[in-house]
Image 1 (spheres, helix red, strand yellow):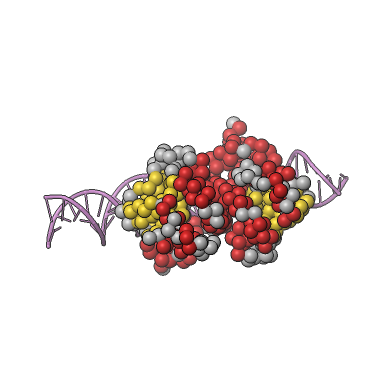
Image 2: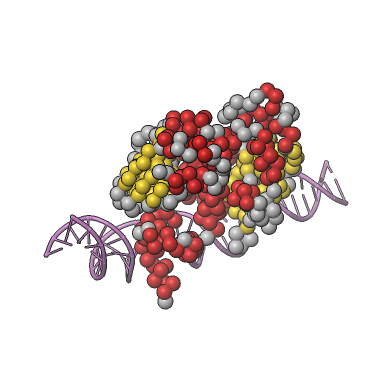
Length: 191
Length: 191
DNA sequence: CGGATCGTTGATCAACTTCAACGGTCGTGG
DNA sequence: CCACGACCGTTGAAGTTGATCAACGATCCG
């Protein structure tokens, strides 16, 4: 059933056979079509999400009401507003499907129960967050070290398949530049 | 001895009495004077650091050779280049003391042993990284939502004591703006 | 076919950087 | 204890990156 999550977990920790069927019971599958929402700003952040297939976009509305992406998640990524999730508070973010997407979700209290019942999963999540935090600091590093033009090409060269998959204006938003400027530097690069 | 780390851990998980003296054995205390280094770019990232007293500055040298801060750590914060630490690779960052600083440090292999011996500490570190990752995303959100001027005043108003403690040019670097521009907007604000 | 969505173009403009120079302060050595 | 130098914040002028705005074209989908 959620062989996929199981496979992902066993990359980091050993899972006893007898737990194979018990872990998935804590999760619920959700199918989203393109542009469907998992989370909206102002609402309680009840869930943590694991992407089985597809792509999620986490964004907020800036003061001009323009959506501003802060994070994507594709296959085998976890996503939530973890400050709001951990404190069970309201979030300021939206989570929306970029394409048709299938996720597993788990509530905060169920995740607490899950970790209580299978304590070795703490290690799994510790790894997940440790890597995510490290990657996030690298991202800040790039934001500070590179020009917007370099940021764009650095990203599209590092993740070419992703640049194919996601509309250009979303990549622009994620990288903190305007779609117009992306157009400009791409044209410049061609000549 | 490291009552302070113990106190911090027990905020998140319960620690059996008998472990009170055994946990600190994995750590080593290091005293740094102002400008002293814990980590240098190009070297193996062997340690994870916990600040007992003082303040650390994690930075890298940008293409012009100017230091660029990506993270501070004060009392009760953990700090390392976690991507390099997790993979036991070389780092591109420096970690330097902003003021006289006292830290605990633990090697990668000792931390693995520590977590093996006291598995409940996985939960502690999971919390640490979960919060750090959430905060890092909030930081990206601010970088995208606010003008540099707003970023500066937002920060100094949210952490006034910190703005007192750390030289202005380091705060500027951390926030991604030039010292000259900080001067300008502060003057503007006064009139 | 028709409308919404997405990328493009070019002109204008503001935010912020860069550079060079100066002044104050702190700490260290003589 | 004083003097010198390094360090840090400030100023102002000039320059550049990248945003904004408005308009147009292409494509996709119902």
